[in-house]
Each structure stands twice: as C-alpha cells, then as structure tokens.
Image 1 (tube, one colour):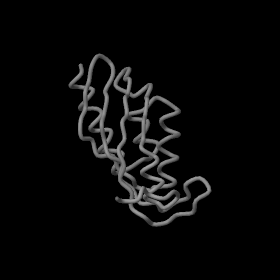
Image 2 (image 1 turned 90 degrees about the vertical axis):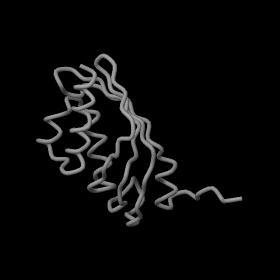
Image 3 (image 1 turned 45 degrees about the vertical axis):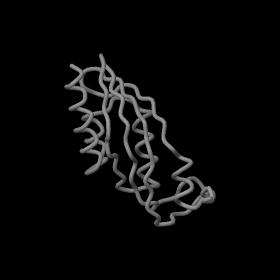
Length: 126
C-alpha cells in the first residue's frame, strides 16, 4: 500500500504541474483546506510547481520533501506582483483514504519566498 500511495502522490504532483482545475483536484484531493491552499498559491504564483525530492510512505501517510517553484505574477496578500522567480523548500505530509488526500500538514519556507519577492530583506553576506 505504501508504494501505491507514493505513486499516487507523484501522479498528483505531476498533475498539479500541468493543471490545477477542479477536475484535477477532485481526482486526488478530498480535503477543503488543501484545495484552499492550492488556490491561494495559484493566485500569487500562477502555474507553480512542486518538485519532489524524497517520499516516505507508511500506513496511510506519505511525507514529501520538495521544492516549490513559481513566479510571483499575482498579489501576495497586500503585495502586488513582482514577476520574480521563487524557489523554496516545502515539507508536506498527506493522509490518504480511498486513494485521495483527506488530511495534510504543510511546512513551507515562506521566509525564503518573502525574501525572494523582496517583501523582506535577505540576510547580508559576510
């Protein structure tokens, strides 16, 4: 079962990279909060992608270490689009039931994202 969930997760990441429509989400996700997170990121970073580096599956859960890639072409809170490219670490765990994500826990490095779009200063070198 664990390898099946890793396969579903990779197919989900691949599908998100092509299309974040309701039909795509309905195929993989049965959790409203995750759908809202996806919609929020899609507004700020249209056509963003997730690059999975590691997946660990056990029981009904999959943990993913990934990188978020996007271009800031939409508003991010009060900040207007900057057109800047971002790339930041993302850690996410999914719980599956009946082949769909029903719960998730996510830790995104938003400090790095905010530095890359210029909302906060990056640490100085040296």
